[in-house]
Length: 398
Ligand SMILES: [Zn+2]
Image (cartoon, rainbow, N blue to C red; front, side, top):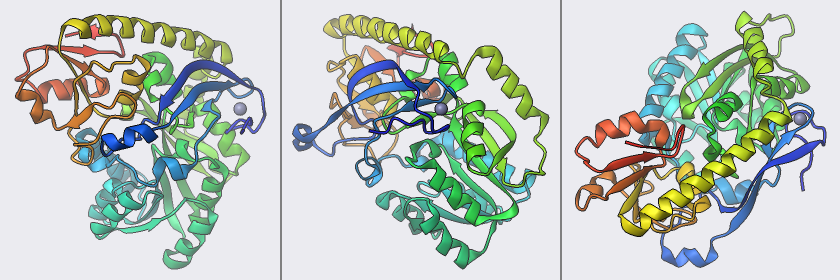
């Protein structure tokens, strides 16, 4: 068992949220015959008493998690917009003309970079998803982002201006190997850009439903700085971005003479003010989360005994909410991704269907597991006359 902090390498980890056994949030089943083989794993979230990093310390082999992956970014409209903006930032603000993206998924960013004349190569571990990206004519290598993968890429395309990983860095069991791979690929004045879920938003919005096994860590500026500095980088700029209900975009350099933007010190001060990197803050968070799960679970079970309920948004958040609250009475789960349609949700095994199927027999209530996209979903489903329920950022009925 790994008992060493992912960021600082010390061993004073403390559990603050025990969610019990839960299914893998990305473990969609292709049909009912797979239910008997489904595994649930304990989910106990820890905080480091030295640097304050939020982390899961029972990682599961990436073989189990990502070899076949049911998350294709290009089916999520807000993500397409996000990556258009990110590609503009890389080409217009940073003036990068060459880039490598690890965890490139189906090429959602690579396509946007190509459209802006940035020569970009992708790396992704998932065989089925990287094949989709190559099908678009993109340069994509299937493999783990580590030095052994990076060296042949550098030999082939030369050093690059920019290396980035968007919402995937927290999946890496060995972040130091990914950072070494980035150093191998970067020009001396190149920049590393990481987009990561932000612990500040986790705390503020109580969004425990992102704390699933696949997410080994939730980072802050403080904890990411600790990790980067142990591996030859330092933070030179930081932006808060809305992706996944709250993320950070952190730019780091291996050039010790490169001075950080004043935004870095400002956010570090804000984290100190919020006590974001302190264990006591997270103990309190853990208590609030367990209470919320209890309240949502009881309320929904009462409703489910009398009324018809669907869920909307078959993401990792859905698997966590429905399993933690044992919401077996939910009939179906609507999701716009054709990749997931027809599969069964991990844990409670509702069939995933396209949102259009909800029209045939509209339920009384829709439990919005994709609560972070509420405005957009409500606009798309303007015909629906029943009641929407959001579990977060507040448990509310609309
Ligand atoms: Zn630590």
